[in-house]
Image (cartoon, rainbow, N blue to C red):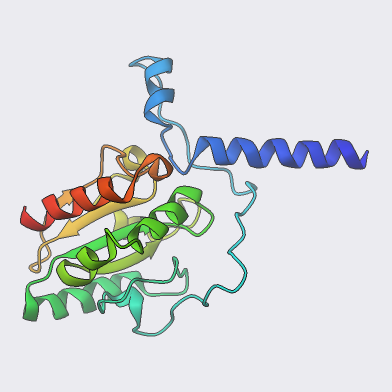
Length: 202
């Protein structure tokens, strides 16, 4: 019985990891299903949570990194007032004209964790530090901050992580509605850096 339960748990976790963090399936899934396939629904609330690595710093609170201060946010903090974070970051960008990079995601999402590692790589981190203000916005299991997300990106088509670039005046420069980052585990730091360089000049 114990072996059967362990096997079932392992199978479910593997399915979640292979599925990724997309609410609409990977490009491979969509191609195989054909053009009339219905979008994949958001992950079920009972899906297993990917544990945070031991020794990582606690999530930011107050007006720290999540408010687009120039530091990379430490995960997606569900307790933050995301709308206030965006407003604070926009006010700061009015002074230095740095665009905002809104990162919609969740701590349970493996692709979000991969993108976070890519953000901290030597190829990507200097671009974010010098050219952007980053605001991480928690979407839970597609049940949190959805009204805010809907102002900028279509999570149904983008999956998570979903990235949006705002000009300092708050207008949307670009949004990853094509799901470009929902399979972040297949991306390299060079690929992410190329996106950021292009978007900074948009």
